[in-house]
Image 1 (cartoon, helix red, strand yellow):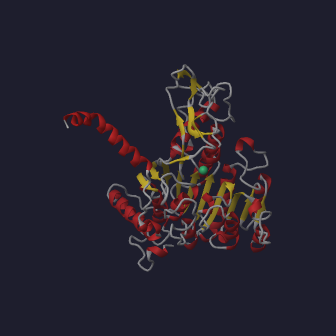
Image 2 (cartoon, protein in one colour):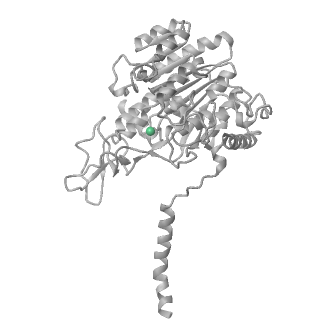
Image 3 (cartoon, helix red, strand yellow):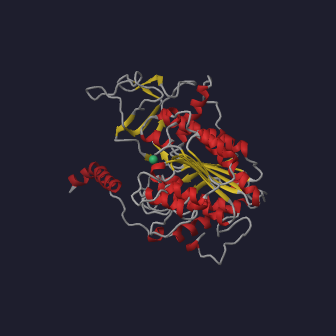
Length: 486
Ligand SMILES: [Zn+2]
């Protein structure tokens, strides 16, 4: 007995360790049933909105209503991506880089958004789009529906219902998960042929005034239902202008009708690999805002536009950080364009990301170290140097034939793979919070740490959209139950 008691201190850590490892590897499968329903997320977001309004009531006097709303989304735009892209921007101009400024730095208010979805700790772009556009968290892969299958209307649809003109702009396929969150309702994001049909045939897609992005084949060649959705769009928009190149897009600026631009069969090319025929994101953003300003002048109700830099995420999935950072700088150039073209007294601009990626910026690199290259000072325990930027999980580990890590210095370039710690098929999303930036009327409500599905509720508040609490109506519209939130 005495012997066993003496052994106990040795055994205890082992027992605890066993229990701890067990608890880290077993996943709780039971989900709270209320999370399946729109009403849960809508009420929860409205409660948070109430708390937020109470918190800032006496501190801030901003009675301005947002007439226009521009929502900018950097897909996979993690905070490390932001920092590294800022340094790259500075280094491209010949400076050391760290002190450079992004357009995003001109936003007076910023906060963080919690990106988890109903069934996943680390989310995808579908459930997050449903959160930041529809105000409801849902299952991974689901667009515009709650986890139990209820239809979730987006803030873009709320804007249309309030008489605003609307648009979507993306560098991915128009039917990809993020832009689809503005107008589509499908259980699985892969149903892109159905998403394309909804864009052209259903509300709110068919009432969009501006549609710019890639993915033409989902509207034409890939279809098995005999429809040519491009022809259909032209028939229902006889005054509309259709663009397939930058030149076309410029020629469309004089047209009086709606604008549809599709620049590629699938995703648009990375900016680094694109021909001059392909418009840049900032050029699409400018064309969209010009058209929406023109259109909204007719009735004076303002506009809502969703603008996505969608291929930051793709650069990260390929673990080619040079592409990801260049796409981030393209996104930032679009932010710059939006700021220049709008009046901050009447336009709310919100810029955020859907989820993070596993890019890390590690070591103690000296000021001005080329951000896409090696850190000259640092060595691992075997004396092998390493790069400043690495991914946690990715395609390439920079190993020699014996499986030992070797210096990636000879391989690294603007378009090369970036080293990763763990060998995977591709880069993966990561689950930490992402940044939210805001300027314009009511922008101060975007602060602190927010649930991602709160964002459209704050936009709704600022621009008097939807049936929740708004600047124009301090109580929820009792005529509308939250389960039919519109
Ligand atoms: Zn992704």
